[in-house]
Amino acid sequence: MKKKFDQVYQFKITLKDIKPPIWRRIQV
Image (cartoon, rainbow, N blue to C red):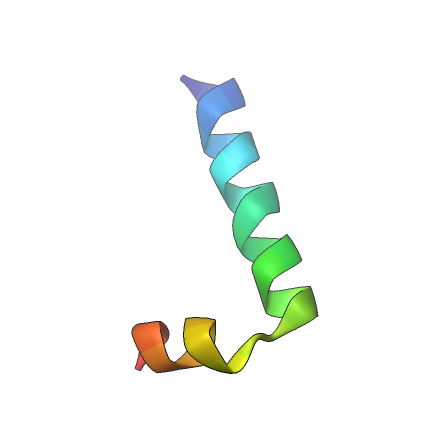
């Protein structure tokens, strides 16, 4: 369970790093 959470967290960090306009639109 923790491993899956870490993966999701890493995935979010990667998306934040890229900062695509589409992702920001989805977040808002």
